Image (cartoon, rainbow, N blue to C red; front, side, top):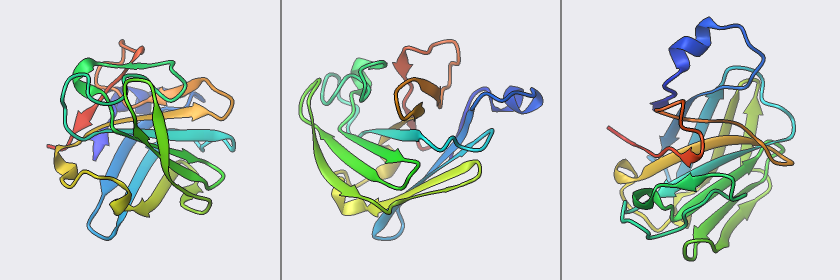
Length: 168
């Protein structure tokens, strides 16, 4: 489980802003399950994005977010992007260089939203990597028409970069 650096502070503040508080990835079954919890009910038109860096090799993979609004540090270029729409559709992309990507999986009933929690399921065979404990993970919630609601961050003051986490 990955927790947002501002979680304790955020819980003490009354706010209607959306705060991505935690992210969990599970892969014990043939399916990969990604789950996130937010500070408020998830808006009806939102997109949950999970960026996966399989190898931590500088400049290998894609260096920007789906909409090009955020950059990845060179050591965190991603190989896979999971885009989950709050209406149920999940699409998985594989990086094809620093700016290109190709769709490798799509399903219309793979996302569930219950209040402040969002869960995504898809076959883990879609991803080429074999050791999720070594992967880097960056997570954001965005509006369906663009605009970032929140990203999971260790350093809340730095907002122009995708912040990658690794299991400990």
